[in-house]
Amino acid sequence: MDKTTLRKQYLKLRNGLSPSDTSFLSSRITSSFLSSSRFQKNSSFLLYLNVGNEVVTRNIIDHAVEAGKKVYLPDPVIINEKIRVAQFESWDSMVKGAYGIAFPDGKAVELKETDITIVVMPGIAFDTKGNRIGFGKGFYDRLLGDLQIEKVALAYDFQIHEGQLPEEEHDVRTETLFTEKRTIICNNF
Image (cartoon, rainbow, N blue to C red; front, side):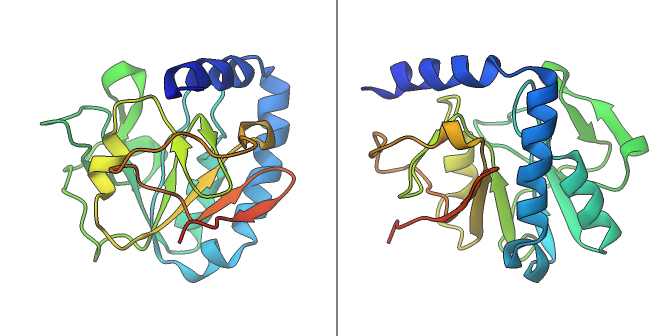
């Protein structure tokens, strides 16, 4: 199956979640991530602010800030086909951005390896090799490029594709997947 067909199939499944299922499953995924060494050992995170039925990230953001870790969020305004990021300070400092996605009301910066030690990537489908299907724009692939930053993803277990997803040369893989049922160390090297 091609990426477009798979994207539609998995998006339909994710969009079919009820608000209570989204909340329940997200809390289990959050607990798994927060108790992991991936959360404990890192000091600065690039997280996404969930939209629709994506895994809810608000509690992770709150825990990271409470633990004295830096949190960056992507700017929903894409400049020159690139995502910019800004540091999260508090929920009071958020402003409504493009597509209705909230964004820290601060100066957006270019991502550097020295700023962030781990990226929590969104996605629609994943495989156990770390391949992911996003919305098809390649923003995270361009953002992360060759940066040597640890990459993880949060997903509902039904988003894990049996077999290998189609991949392209520029695709950036995730190293660890956290679901409500398991943690998958991706076999991508």
